[in-house]
Length: 200
Image (tube, rainbow, N blue to C red; front, side):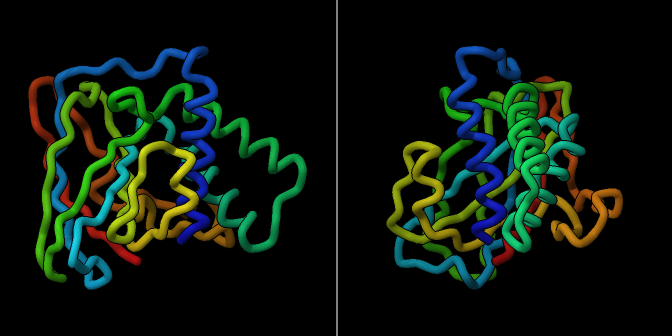
C-alpha cells in the first residue's frame, strides 16, 4: 500500500517545487459529492484523517505509467532511464493535472468514527468544470495530523480506492482499464455524485 501512496508524494512534491513556475487548473463552480463505503479497517474511536487528490483525466496515460513505474520500483527496481522517466511524468502531471485546494494539491478532511458497513459522504467544492477527473482517496489511522505533503510518508495508511482494475507492473499498461465510475465529468453549476469503495 505504501508504494502506491509514494506516487502521490512524488507528484505533490513536484507541485510544491513548481508552484511558482506553472499555472494550475483554474477554480470554477462544479462540485463532487463523494459517497464512501466504510470497510472494517476503518474503526473508531476517533476521526480518521483523509487526503483526496483530484486529477485531470487527460493525464490518464501518464497516471497509469507512473503507477506502473512505482510498482516496478518497489518489486524489482528501476533503470536510470526509468527513474528519469518517473520524474518527467511527475512534472507533467503536476503541471497539467492536479486541482489545488487552498493552495495545496490535495484536499484534507476526516471520516468520523463510524461502524464498518456504514457509509460516509462529503462534497468537494470549486472543482474546475467542463473536465473529467480521477479521484484518489487515502484514509489514515486515527489521531494522525496531516498538514503538508511531506507528512504523507510518515503516517499509517489504512485504506484507499483503486483507479484501475490492475495496478501491477507485471501487466502491460495497455491492459489497465479505469474502474467505474472513473473518469467522472464535472459540469458547470452541477454536483456530480460518485460512489467510492475503499480497500486495504
